[in-house]
Image 1 (tube, protein in one colour):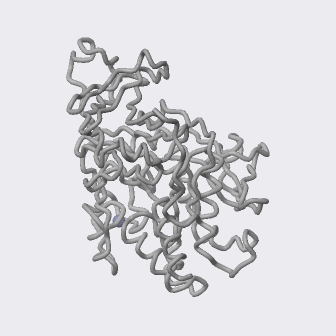
Image 2 (image 1 turned 90 degrees about the horizontal axis):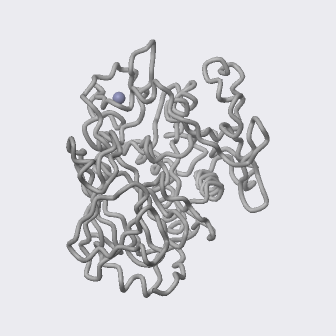
Amino acid sequence: MRFEISKVLDAIEGRVCTDPSLARAVLDLAEVIRYQDLDGGRPANLLRLGMVIDALARDLEEDSVPVYAIVHRALLSDADLTSNERMVVRRWADDGLVEVLDHPGDRMLEVADLLGLPVLSRARFDGLRGRFPWTVEQPGRVLAPVPGAGGPVFIAHVGGGNVPVAGTRSATGEKLLARQWRCPEPGCALFGGGGGGGAFADLARVERAPAGQPPPSLRGGVPTCPRHGARLGDAGPRPRTEVLAVRIGGLIRRRFVLTEEQPVLVGRAPEQQGGIVLGQWLNDEARRWISRGHVRFELRATAPGRGAASDAPSRSGRGEVIVTDVSTNGSGIRPGGSMTEADRIALKPQQSRVLSAGDMVELYPGVQVGRADELPSGAPFTPTSVMAEAPTMAMRLPRP
Ligand SMILES: [Zn+2]
């Protein structure tokens, strides 16, 4: 039993992050774990975070949607949690996967404001409407997770809807996220140079890339570390990023961030650190076709004047995404997302191509990668639950 719970907590760990490009909603962990009415169990239970994340994935019709969790520091020693749960939360804190604060205050709303994310909370934010008008003006932007028939459901504070609605990054958020920041506190898990430095530093597995830094807190107009209250130093422009998504069987299975520093391998089971593993979603035929590392994605700055010469329409400021087939069997390009077979362009092993607007890379029929904002989720399938025991269900894909 204990082992099973560990596996579920590990699965939840993959769904918490402070990366502005990947987080899809903001919540307060201390609040969510005390939603006793969700299961009628003990006063605090970390598994309730998984239940809320599952509900979010279902509503957004994607398989894995990470949340940005604000964590009151007292939670790290909360006696209502099991020692195992406390250890897990401390590990998340040390790895910078969650934001641990002495005084969370209105940080949850600040993050939502800067990043344009929905807020999952039962709290009323009456006193904060002036500063964050979207809490009352944008229906679906703030939702309360409440008990439903098959797990939690969301009820919008305003407008009565059930589906979380994202806004846009505020102008301040855009400005803050254009730079990278450095906290003077040694080992800062949020704005440090690398992994955590806390009591569990030896377990830290996350090297925080500058591109994935959380948004600073703005105090009196000064970018500040929300954890240490220290003024942040400006460490130069933030690296360019592009968010790509993997769609299998019509459903977005996960998103990942591509930076100029680090190419990303996608395949059945890439050996590269940070590679995108698809194996758990593939049927036998697809597993046989798709190589361990199948395609490699790179991001590079668009060379001046080059956009017009290549067949890739220039996407100003976003850089070019280059795909290289590194497989045994090859892959294909769906130009502009066209599913017409006559349009499909073969990408032979070792061939490269610059992705044009809307282009999808197809590793195997039904297994596609493209820019996240250009790849809609068809959602004919139920997202895999993070609460389910790993490994997740293998899907049946159409035969080639
Ligand atoms: Zn700090």
